[in-house]
Image (cartoon, rainbow, N blue to C red):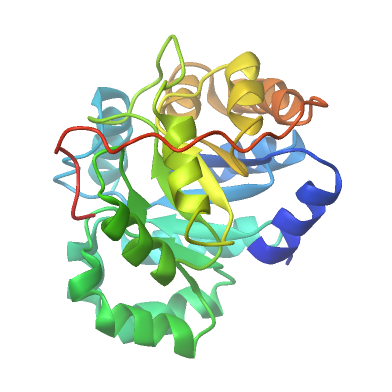
Length: 275
């Protein structure tokens, strides 16, 4: 399996962005992930279904509800990770912290590494409370990924970026997840603020749903993270639809665009922070 560092290095050499695709684990997810990887997704986020997904919009909530109704458990998530990892792409788990706290951070790190996982994205874990997870991730060579938001202060951005490995997850908009008609106007400035304090790659998520949008975001970010658009497509069209969307997005991040570093923008008004 390629590591995240290897994937980002290869993309830089090709002067393109990395495409990251998200789906929650559950019925049909394994087939959809296989189609996405075959069509050009560079890395995968496997969502751990949770009963209180406060940061997720209605599309992901619908998929999570279906997965929970089908009995999808953390063990099932690890099986999905193992299956996708065999395809040769890095696999991260995206999860709220409560299920990991209950499972046990050290045990989870060991089991995730054994399944071939590359890391963990924890949208609601404050850095101040992340000590046990960071220690477990270090022991098992997993990449911890935290989120920065448009409302994050420069000091907060620096603190969070300093803890991330693999990439820093920059949320492009304030609010819950969901595909949007236009990309975020504040995302380029947020990416610039992250790059001012770290050499770790920056991925932008929340809202991308088309090849043109993926190309736009790949013009200033290292990775384009697509979630709700994949989830909606799988709910409507299954694995075949996921593969078709992945091909469009993969073409977008591979367009030969200049990669300028945008000027930093001041922080937005307080909002989604502490993540």
